[in-house]
Amino acid sequence: MSSKIDLHLHTTASDGRLTPAQLVAKLAARGLRVIAITDHDTVAGVASAIEAAKRVPDITVIPGVEINTDVEQGEAHLLGYFVDTSNANLVSNLERLRTSRETRAKRMVAKLSGLGVNISWPRVQALAGSATIGRPHIAEALLEKGYISTFHEAFDKYIGRDGPAYVEREKLTQEEAVALVLGAGGLPVLAHPYTVGEVEPMLKRLAKVGLAGLEAYYKDYSPAKVKELVGLAKRYRLLATGGSDYHGIDDTEVLPGDVNIPDAVADKLFALARARGFEDKLPLV
Image (cartoon, rainbow, N blue to C red; front, side, top):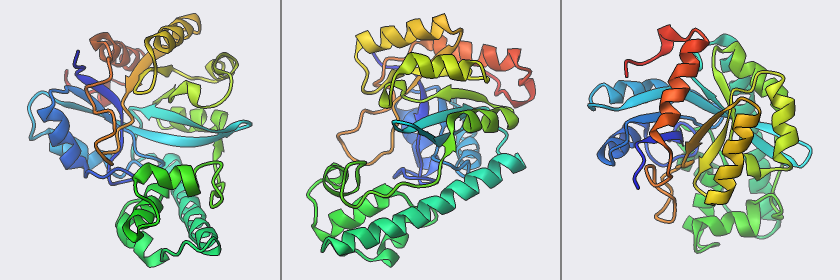
């Protein structure tokens, strides 16, 4: 079954391989109708995606962002939908997080050098181009130099959380990220909830401060996990959303449209946005 919805997508504005316009064209060709651009710690790709969508019939772009947050067990991500991309507080905080990404990437390159794995910082910058520098760009440099044979090997061998060249970076708490999205007039949604720690205590805590939903339909989740998350969403009166977390990196990725996301997800998302008074931000669907 092919889904017409994907609410978790990345472009060259962060660590995706496709420009916003290329991504919109690809997804339109695959028959998607409602998509959200959710780049890491930036909203720079949103305007281009919305403009590209004007040239493609029957596709709607929701302005979004994915914010990395710090939890005791590691790192958790928060999605924000319908955010005001010109909100000064949002923009300045995202800029701070992006700056910390670059500092972190430089330290990773230095650590790799100490391991005898020599890639140059200027090359990593060139691979990133105008996008925020992240670990995928380091992985590209490693692949280019022949230190690894696959993109994912970079994370398994060197720059994953348990890798010898891994470096922590500055992050917000989950509560701070929820407040940031709400302050920018958006709907905060917990991304891929099974990534870190116990899910239910996290939901219980965040629901109290304004969490609007959780990502139940996700590329790696079995039907049993999806069912459990949908049940938790109902229990805490949260919206169950979904997405592929697509980056356009290689052929092993789950493609947008291949995650079984019910059409009702988009209807409920727009209904919640209207209930929150987002009429001026909503596309005509």
